[in-house]
Length: 346
Image (cartoon, helix red, strand yellow):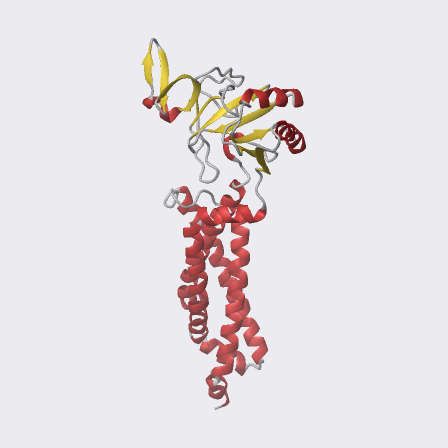
């Protein structure tokens, strides 16, 4: 009980640090994991294509490209930008709609001016002759189904999908899933050759590299990262003083060990082992506290999950920083304060 009473302040301090770091690292790792889930059910093999014309327009249509894509692949999914983040034009070739729909249909047949919307948008529709319509850019689209949009903080899905107008100009931005990059380049090169270079395009993989994923995580978790960096700074500034105060509270025990012949190294190592015991115990309490905080939903707007990997990294972080500051504190204490030895000698 005496050991606990003398260590209560540092235990509370370490429990608070452990609780926050468990939550913070879990949130950051969850955010990083979510970056691999691309928008609108796309796979990591998806290709983004931008097609432009030096003349501003072209006689080529979406149908011209679709004919070649259909011949090149048994199945694919194609999205074309509508000029808004919230919606996309869609074309399905022998593939299923990538979201769960209200009708539970997967094989959906889009037709001209048809649309599938997020269920949250159903209140924004109008009904004529028992048919629902959704207004977008001054035009009414027939609602053929609705889907359940999964809430995501990164790579958010679109809120509606309208049938690709195959007669529209080929100019625009696309994402295609199911067509090899080289095949797509060959098709586009044929178009470029046909128009003597007046048609240009750029083609890139939609999958993110490590740097891009880290950038997304930083944007998504900027508040958590800022608080974590501030916490590290506070740990460096405060932990040394806290540990020194803890050592000072144990002067009598240290004197006793000197009296029975313990060396300076033995006492320092004993203090370090005692600190490790406090650190691990505090971390276990902090982990339980983090799980409780998450399960009660106190920080749901910031923390999406507490996972084993975040807890492990938090343990490594706390153990490394804690051990480093403990060694510095103990060394500083024995370098600058020799009063214990002098009291023993007297």
